Length: 310
Ligand code: SAM
Image (tube, rainbow, N blue to C red; front, side, top):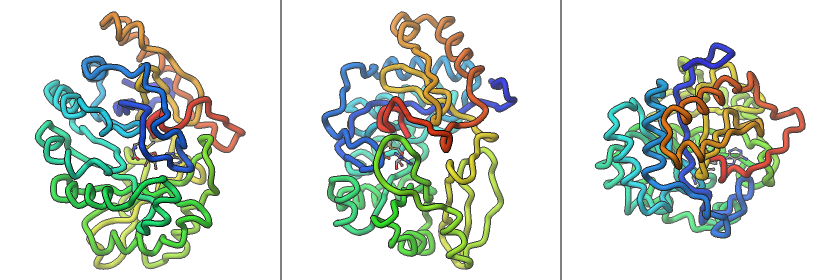
């Protein structure tokens, strides 16, 4: 369906849980202590996906928190896949548990996988996430064989991992993966942003690829690169004009815009399996989607990123 600013909204991001074993300094710092009292069931998520498909949604992403902490993750993927309504069913994960689950996820109907990887150095990885790098690297190896093209998401923080930019670019040169630098957003965590425009200026051998306006990333390539280097710049190059997404938290709250605290509770409609009420609430939320995010205008989020789902 179309929002009040003429944008076609067809991309649903479901946060399956707030829980995460990683405590990324810019994200949650919540770790295992996050609450999950409110977490919806697999059947609830599949129900939301069904109603959204009837409203014209075509893409779905499962995120969190860490979605692989859900023991029923394959059941959720397979339930959504069986709706036969989505062109794209994707997952965002830190990959720490992916080596054990990648095959089953693929068999369940998962089509694509984005992996967060903020450092290639075990010590820096530990400083950022509080966890070991090795399990995530094993997860990436397993996923690379099954999901193509694999996307690696990297958030750069000044003085922490910004010395690794060239190493990440080399990853895209040597492997068929898309490495995407996501500008740090002010979501209540710590760290100083690295501007994507500064990276582009510092690596002039990267040339722009043709832009896909439904994607937040702008992609670049160097000669002989197997993969691409992407830049997602919510702060310095707001892409709100092409925004096609809404987010639903693990507790059933819809956020029409990441950079706004506007939210709508869907929980009653979900609990009562009231199709009409749920469709009406989602429609109302889409119609209220702000034209622009409020990053850069003193925005203070009332939820952390692990709650909203990145
Ligand atoms: N646990 C999963 C993971 O690590 O990919 C999924 C959830 S995580 C919240 C989703 C994405 O949000 C990750 O790629 C993470 O780097 C990004 N993210 C979290 N906080 C952010 C922030 N303040 N600014 C930019 N990206 C952020």
